[in-house]
Length: 131
Image 1: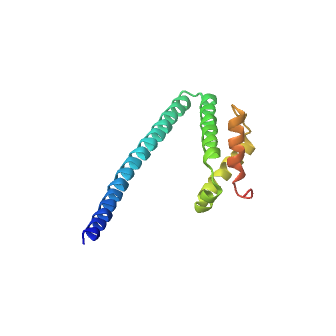
Image 2 (image 1 turned 180 degrees about the vertical axis):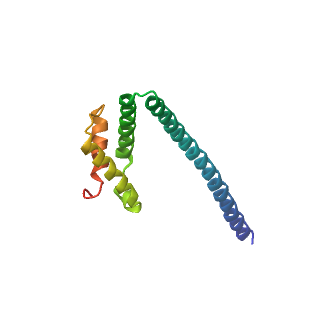
Image 3 (image 1 turned 45 degrees about the horizontal axis):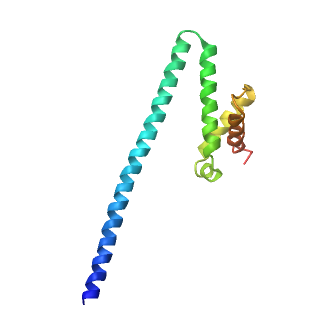
């Protein structure tokens, strides 16, 4: 009888530990995700303001340069993160990358570094007709 009670108590303790541990990991993950998202949104907002200020001042050349730099950064991020299986889950990603590829075909751009060039090539590889 004593062994049975000990086993039940151990299983109950294990379940409580798993529930509490899972709950705390979920909360930590949610906070980390929110912080990362806030950082991205704030960065995009500041770049948008920079481009808008240049456009309103009539400085289209610098505005285009800012946007090209943003696109380079986006391609660098995509090249590092891109998984073809994720693209298949959201076909709109392929359409968006096709738009980027078409844009860069019309307006070629020198990348700032070989790393960005390689990441951009990787991201562009997963567009319509290149899968």
